[in-house]
Image (cartoon, rainbow, N blue to C red; front, side, top):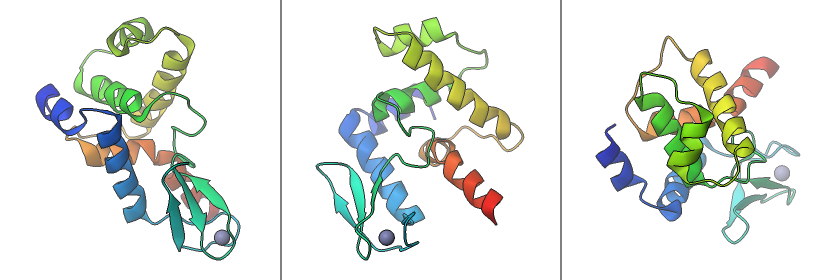
Length: 148
Ligand SMILES: [Zn+2]
C-alpha cells in the first residue's frame, strides 16, 4: 500500500473507525461472559452490548489497541509507517511524524506493533487494511489458539 492509497483510505479518524468496526463485525465479537455472538452496537461508547447477558465489550478489547488512549488514526498510521519502511524507525521519529506531544505512548505503541510484526515475520506482506486489521487483532487470535 502506497502512502497515497493509505491516506486516501484512512484520511481521518472516522474512516479508520468505520474500517475497524466493519472488521470487528466480520470477525464476530464473542461475549466474554456468556460466549454469545449477538450484540447491539453502542456507537456513542464504541461498545458492543451482548443481547443475552448485557455484557459490554469495547471495540478495542482483545487487540493491541486495548487500553490505549491513542486514536485509531495514530495506530493505523504507525503500522503503515512501520510496515512500509525497510529500516526500523525510532520512536522519536514516529512521535514527530504523528505530531504527538508525549513520547511514552508512542514508544509503547511501537513496542506492541513490533512484537506482532516479529511474530509474523515469515508470512508478512504489505498490502493494506487486511494486514493492518490482522495485526491489531493478534491478541484475540493468540488467546483463542492458547485456549483450544
Ligand atoms: Zn453475553
